[in-house]
Length: 127
Image (cartoon, rainbow, N blue to C red):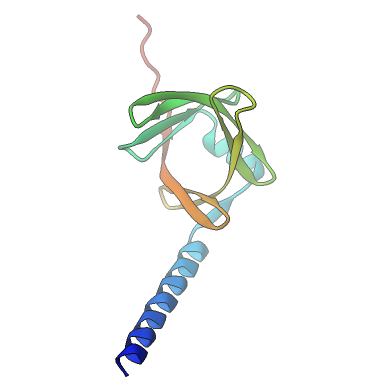
C-alpha cells in the first residue's frame, strides 16, 4: 500500500510539473525571423553573473563567459538564433528564443538551455 501511495504522489508531482511547464510556454512569446535580428542587433544579453554576450549588428559576437573572453558570430535562420563560437567552422548552435517580460529564454528541443536579460551595448569612452 505504501508503494502505491508513493507512486501516486510521484505521478501527481510529475503531472504538476508538466502542467507548469506548459503554462510557462503559453505565457512566453516566441520570437522569430526579422524580429529576432532586431531584438539582438546592437544589444547585450547577460544573466548578470556568469556571462555577457554582445551581439554586434554585422553578426559578430563578443563577450565574457565565466571570466573568459569569447568571440564568435551570430545569425538568424528558420526562426532561430544561431551562435558560432571561436573560429568559423567550429560548429553552430541554434536556439528557439522566447521572451517573458524582461527575461529572454534560449531553448533547444523545447528545453531551456539558458536565459538572460537584454540591454543596449555599453559604449566605452575612447582614450
